[in-house]
Image 1 (cartoon, rainbow, N blue to C red):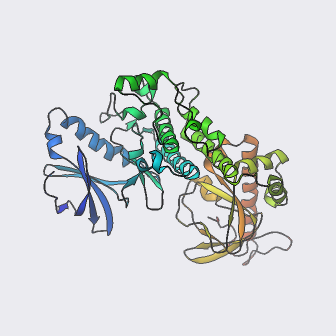
Image 2: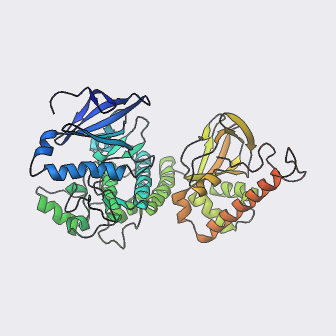
Image 3: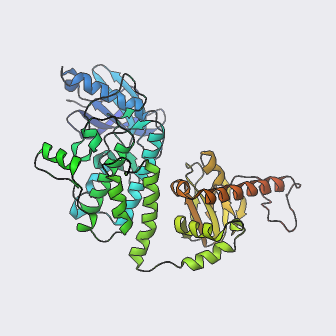
Length: 444
């Protein structure tokens, strides 16, 4: 686009990060809040093009409109949009490093299977959030999934995203990247959230095998395979994965919408189960489930759970062990899980002040989890500690009876805390388990 501008609006331009056929991305700086940002600037010559200009301008501000509606840790934030002269620009979250999942979709650069499962699980969580806001991304592919320096994900590029409740700004017609299009997308049928699930299934396949599931020399040949053929098995190219992963890929790529995952949370829940199965593949031996059952059965938290429900928790919950000083929950984080301590002890802190100590049988994180709010406190292990972690995807896949037992136990715990808060300055009561430092505090 010629010379790099020194400033756009209030933003200082630092350097160019990358350039494409439609836009240039710069590293910018917001001096008012001292924050680095990424600024995507549409190429003026594209906007002036009689054929491409109107559509591209529409896409550009469609991204600003839709991504600006979304606030999720796994979705790239769009902060601002503006125009200066003949330059149109978007101001976005800056992800240092500029890497995407595309780097790990070739045979020589494949990630370990547990990391693949983790990354796609996080993508599912981001999509589930977008879908809950009636947004369909429509262009999920490896190059639109950014990676942070600590290998977290950010779903990006909502330029052709669609709101299920259509508006005049919507981008319609056959749009997207052919290799990642669902059969219903190619057929230009009305789209649902399931089209994004299909596209993410393609990404999962590529991360596992280093190849596209459908390959052809021509575009019509590719479309024919997407519409009518089944992809080769993942195990044809990679064997170090749990068998459940093969089932997950097949279900995500199902052409029949009644077979494909109905929503991203179901996709995420099965990935969580595959992660547990993967640990068995890696170690070559089953963990001692019987020992876990014995430990949980001794905890007051599971006193009213039936044996079958305790076994369900063992089969679906995440069993974690951490050392002294490990931070389990950070104040201000978005809550998508809760925890039950099995052994050891943790300390609850708020604004750096120690509030209380929790021990085996205590739970934490449940209040923020069920209210959908951010964590109100941090949780740090003060001894070597083991705990069961229940995340939202697994919870929603649990049996109704198991969910009801969790709710009943949480309600009893809340009543106990409130009762403890009303027993004088220290809230002490002989013979009852109390949290004297805090009363009814929500731990995490």
